[in-house]
Image (cartoon, rainbow, N blue to C red; front, side):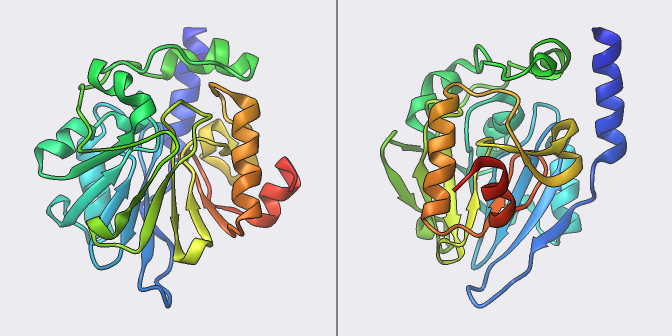
Amino acid sequence: MRGAASLVLLALAACRPAPAITVPRDVHGMSVGTVALSLSNVHVIIGGHVVLIDTGSPGDLDDLEAGLAKLGVRLADVSCAVVTHVHADHAGNARALQQRGISIIAGSGDLMRAINGDHGELHPTSFFARFILKPLIPHRFDAFWPDVRVPETGQYDLHACGIDAEVVAMPGHTAGSLVVIAKGGKLAFVGDLFRGGALAGYVHRSEPEEHFYQDDLVEVHERIHQLLAAGVETFMLGHGGPSTRADVERVFGR
């Protein structure tokens, strides 16, 4: 199993896309860049201020900073970072960013994971996730206390961070999972509600697929349908993506 896991790591490194603007600036005055790190994406909302969606895995901070630089962004420009859920590959640098003066927003349902620095048990959705991928996933990270804790049925207006977007609690992937809605409700940053393509989203990146791990798979599907019903057109993912509405409907139904 270790040999198979090593092959997966090599494949991920070979397929990782370069930092790029994935959603161009439009009438909303906002563009989105994506930095693909060792195991996950960090999305960069560039508007009146800069907000990060997720923070990468432990050890990714230098690569994150280098990727931001390629997008013309410095860490000093970032006002807030939204942690879509407290798994190590998304919350791994939350504390380090907080120490740089960046406000960290996370869901209250994941608070114990955050303050323990351990995301606990993963619930695999496939044989591959259980036996091949799981050894690659770190579970420990630097503990942090979020500056903003979004209640499990709550919302948070990101105008406080200088951009026109909203954080919405959508438990399912974890108890504290968050989704960020922007561009008049047409764009959603959905974390790990689903993933893009094979090999953690680095191949066939836009093709929606069931994520490898879900705390509550039924609730996750309800959240996806909820976002489709709300009129989301483009889905920004924690792994791979972006995915279009048409593709999400084809895979998960309306």
